[in-house]
Length: 181
Image (spheres, one colour):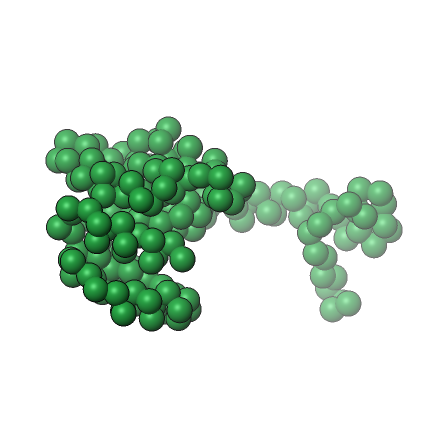
């Protein structure tokens, strides 16, 4: 439970930050976090549709290097701190490297080092640089993906998919015909 590890690391550190923990539907993590004795103010939130509100309240994001989390944080111009180690999912490792390359946050190999990372991130010059770099990113994927999908779908005609060509057999994209079959 990364959220519990993060809260414990913040408790051990000398950091005086306030913490908002979004647990989603992970009720066990929420129970553990609410039962913990916290050294700093902590708000534990279960599933909510108000994620944008909580992101607006935050000064930075701590979490796993998932593309959705990173994208949401950076869209709100929040610097990020993520963990990357041998337990990081293979498809998320490159995201951690990208964060460093883009200079929009920090990567720690263990959340046990979180206190030092938070102190470093919040040093005024570094924090302003991370915020500026996050603001400078122009994520246009939401506009590019529909066009990309349209080109993939146009490339494969319905007749070729129904004919079962060898390429059509390897295609992993679902096909719905206009006849509803």
